[in-house]
Length: 234
Image (cartoon, rainbow, N blue to C red; front, side, top):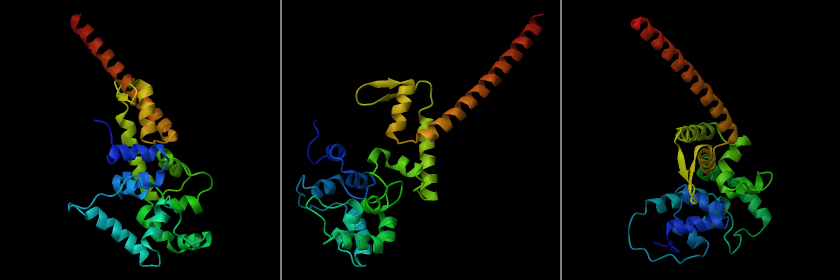
């Protein structure tokens, strides 16, 4: 079945293709739906509500109210998180935008700056250089020492699990174009999960040493067994 304009897969791919990294991060983090992102960008019209779960909507509304109760409108809080709406900024001037970030930074970061992701305003005011792509954001923040101790530990645990998953000798991966095997598959797997190359080198070296030790022990066991068998034959 072909992807259509309101399917999550279609919207996510379009967000990637058009570089809408902030909205993509929000969708991937489960903080907004793909449909909400599409509506925000004017790609689709929101359909009439027909009931269903509203827990996520309530959670987002609560997050926004927490901030808007301190002087920001809901739209302005969203802009600090996701960046300006395609129709333009809701702040009357650059100075007002800077002041809003200065006054509300801690709350914006607490709500939306976690798990190796950062709000749009962080990259606007606190980041030196171009904003990293969504696919490399976490490893870039890790490498630049921009993560909290908790975030760093959380991500490294997940990355270690991702690394371990790719270690079987018969590991394969379908990258969308075909089936990859061996080191090519592992490299694609690491890129997909944004595992820092520094950690890959470190863990790979440790893995090779462990395999070598296991091989040595196996060789010793085999030699002892063969000697014992030879003694019995004699």
